[in-house]
Image (tube, rainbow, N blue to C red):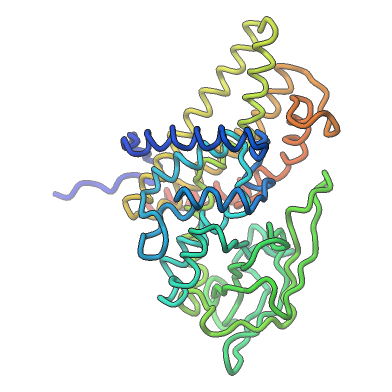
Length: 389
């Protein structure tokens, strides 16, 4: 009698391999060196707001970019759990990792899984060396949560495809090299069909990048205008018409990592330092304890997804749950820090002070439950996953 298929919401206990534990010490020593040179500033949201290509290349020199890519393509050939430890330490320290973030997290694995051999040989070694940076071209003005309704079109030409449309919230497009763009190649069938992915050179003719500034004034996102941009046949990623399946497979990488609960962790560290300098009350300690317990719980769930990826699974439902719980925790952490230690949030305060870090986290907080899929959409994915089971 065959054993039942485990529930998509079962997260088995994960024990980190010994190699991952020793790796943690190496990363902390590296971060101490970088902190001394002034590159690691302990900022919240460093995976989005900390673009430093030099830092990314130094990480790559240690073998810590493209860690899970095979050695034959320039990667380190290590597992997702080992990569997890490196990412966890970098985010907890507030290190500037956004330059290579998308390339390492999902562009590399996507090219490895769906790309041609020529694409793998060209892109993967450059990603692992910190020399090639990617953006994501998915969302559109009227197709955010309803991603399958994208209006960007790819029309056949003699040598490839011509892309027309606008992608919104394209992080880093003004400084990165390529974007993986989701476009419609067939309009005759059901809306989830007829979608394909393309690797688009962000400096090519017909590509125009318009800044979208945050309310803090920061330039992190862009409108990516494709105004008849020609993409050669060799830059179709995967099979024509498989774009929806490929995108949904990517989301397990995008939604489940430690960035989904550690974005605001440096603010918690700052709070603890402030409380150390004064006599913390029992209620303050209780609130900090609740936050710590929630962090521990979401971390366990996130590690479970990393272990599933190591095993070759595609844990989409579990990844959606991690993202939902983790991004709600990010916002709750900011609110709790404000209530535990009422402090004016001052974006003009000395960088690194509690007031300045609090202001930075507050100004970024509207995006926590939106990026990577709204929480409402994620709960629908979780529900459908349970129904399929």
